[in-house]
Length: 311
Image (cartoon, rainbow, N blue to C red; front, side, top):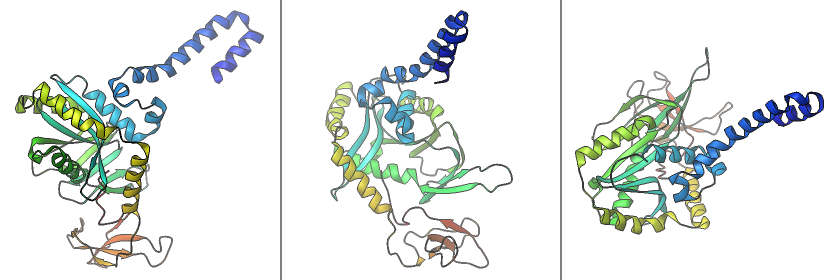
């Protein structure tokens, strides 16, 4: 709008500057057109047909698009599958952000387009995202479900669907360039957690170690079996989202020790589920240390404690 206003004023008050203003208008138009044009020329758009505006406004979808772009130059025969909805034995589905069928194996990616500092271990039920709120203010800490466990669920149902052993899959948790993996502890050697800018080099190194495991024909066969699961209709997608939201809704869980006991990161005591009785947060659920009042550690909850959202 500003450029158009300048052009209009140029016509009225300074005709001599009209060529320069038109050049500014052209540059402005190209700068705003170029990202959309690049997107429409991308393999991701050809495979998903998702509109640029929709992807660019959705942080999760945009992260998956960027992850796909980093892997484009991976050497070797390969095919990609986006947003694959795999059936579970309870009639529900689990959604995988991105699957790479490569001659070195099957790669399953969980994309986390987060910012801030990330803390977590392979076995913790919840990880922590820490966001700065400026100088002299305490940082905001946001728990989120362990993406390694989330991807293990994905691989479980993918291996079941394909009739393959889970050990034949590679698990990658991909965080954005905008976050710092401050303290991530991995113990099993079966999972990779990294920033997006390290993805291509990490997968390339893994492919060299693994060697050729799948022929082009086997990759094409796997792709033809999985591709229909990426083409579900809108009603099925809405049902999937509804099932996830139901799991996130608060339920009548009594206060006290919780299933899958978690430990206080401050003193090592047990965390118990409690309900705030008064104040601005009255009625909200939280995890508190069983050694209270000697230890006053608490963790606020945004989702149900026993929920295992697999996306």
